[in-house]
Image (cartoon, rainbow, N blue to C red):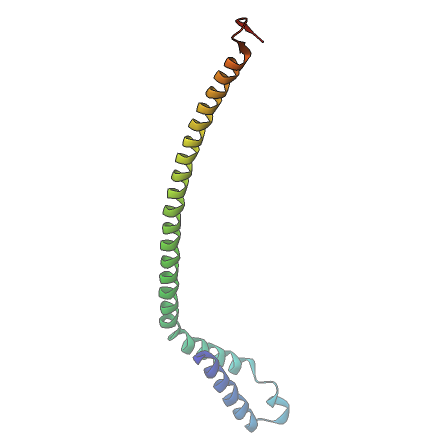
Amino acid sequence: MGEYETRRQKRKSSLDSGANRSPGKMMDPDPVHRYEQMESAGQQSASPGPARSGDCISDEIAERDSRLACAKQMIEILTLKVEKLEQLMALKDGKIQALTMQLQQDDMGANYDDDDNSIK
């Protein structure tokens, strides 16, 4: 915001100084004067800029660190969930195998007829 006010003040002062010129030159300031104004405005805005950008950079770093910590925590939680799901899958697979074996044994027993000792 300070840069904008400084440039506005410079623009106003250049317009005020143009009042002493001829009417034709008032709307068209000479390029050298305009370049000098832009250069001085750039130098003035450059000095407070690094302090502000340093604050912005440190804020961005703090925000990035916070997001990184949240992401790491989320990774840990998701890793634990994956491990639990793998355990459940192993348990489910074990139950499926046990039930499959029991079903096969029951089928073998149902196909066996006790009366004539033959398989259907």
